[in-house]
Amino acid sequence: MKPIDPNAFDRKQAEAAKPIPPQVAHMIRAQMNRGDWLILGILALIWGGAFFFIGVAVRHVQPLTYVWLRLTIAAAAMWSFLYFKGHRLDLPRSAWGSILLLALLNNALPFTLFGWGQTHIASGLASILNATTPIWGVVVAHFLTHDERMSPRKIAGVLLGFGGVATMIGPSLLSSLGTSGLAQLACVTASLSYALAAVWARRFRRQGISPLSVTTGQLTAGALMMLPMSLFIDRPWTHAFPPLTAWGAIVALALLCTAFGYVLYFRLIETSGATNALLVTLLVPPVAILLGALFLDEVLAPQDFLGLGLIALGLAAIDGRLLSLFAEKRRLPREA
Image (cartoon, rainbow, N blue to C red; front, side, top):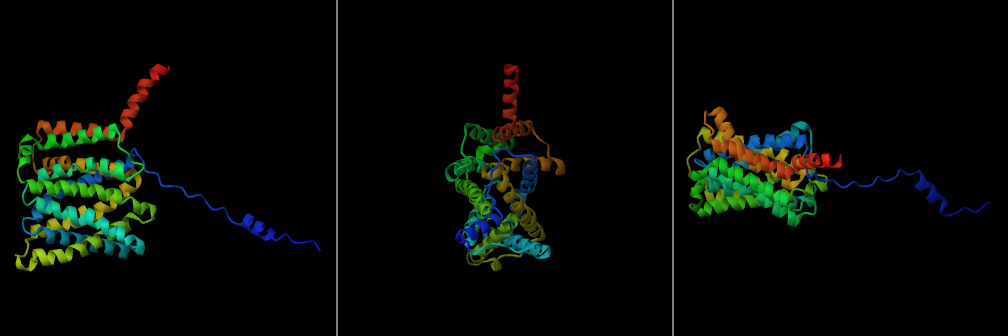
């Protein structure tokens, strides 16, 4: 009888088994494609009106209570969407610690700081300070990621964009930068918090968690975070019931600017990275001004168009495609 090789069965089983596909690491696009730019534009339109809605809300509702209402309505909307679509939250227990930190950095802290800040300074000034987020984002991403390093081109582009925002708001508003220092510092701190949150949110793509689940989880955690703060600090039952205008502004902020906006935002972070996603903050002030001109008969001044040009140059510098195109055209005659 022919002896049986003890390793023969193992070899046969290995040959019959399907090969294990290699794991492909998710790559962040340094240059955004058309789909990414479309999402960025939609986010700019959605968040361009957010400062107006915040200004209406905090006139009648205390900042902590306004944030709790905004997050609670937004979270309820996301849970309803999941239910009617037949989806599950799909957040593993190990991810909830990261979700709690994301809710603090991306919702509870910046929403509260901007809400309180806009009770002391103008919405336009708050939007300028919010536009420092990409500047913070370039620095934060450089130190906390391995694939979004700072470069002279990115720094120059962000500074050009911020210069455009400042130009559009106007020197008269910028002259008030020396007043209400604490409110301005609160808005700058909120912008830094947004930048940290954008980098922190990258981890959920590696864990295979969808933007829908991340959005629902962070809004739920943020609402639970803000509930005791609203009850013990603002004591909302001691204040007058808000008018319909305030409720309309809070609902618009919750459903449009928060729930829907964050789904798009996290999808953009997945594909283009934190630095590119934060460019939306540069587009928010000019979009708000353009919407005012279109629907409120507001007249655009020459500096508005100059600001738009600077912002366009800044975005082009950060994206890099136009610079690469010009460099390629300059090389072609030499090679010929």
